Length: 160
Image (cartoon, rainbow, N blue to C red; front, side):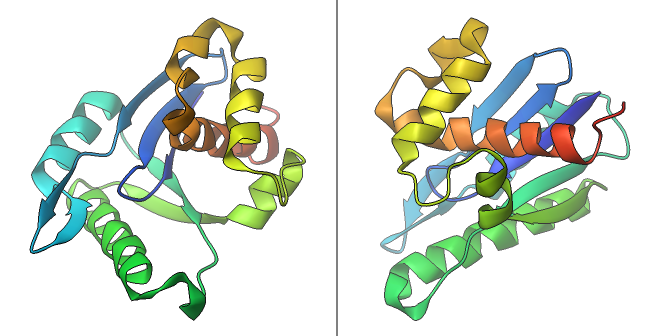
């Protein structure tokens, strides 16, 4: 069994995590246009196709972060733009999308109120054979995409 998950955003990632411990992923391709960083839709589609390959009836689980007006207009715009591109590309490719609240998966792993570094450390602990995927501080988004997929494997597909 393989689960696809994304930690969306301009530094985000999409990961495929297998129940056998396999991990494949790609960092979300972005560019700056009109003084705004956003996902490059066609590059995202191409990377998604490579990741998913011939799998059919795929659902991608996407973190649904809690946003508040205090995040600032630019941050809100960026998050909603990224979610919109992800949602549109998945729909056009015939794949499903389900949101997972960040408090839900973080509570499962004891990461509520933890910094991003703890997510990265947990991913290395759970997948030492893939530690090289999480070696940089900025790889916390990779770690979180992998942990979201693992959360789905452990809760939704625990008997498969």
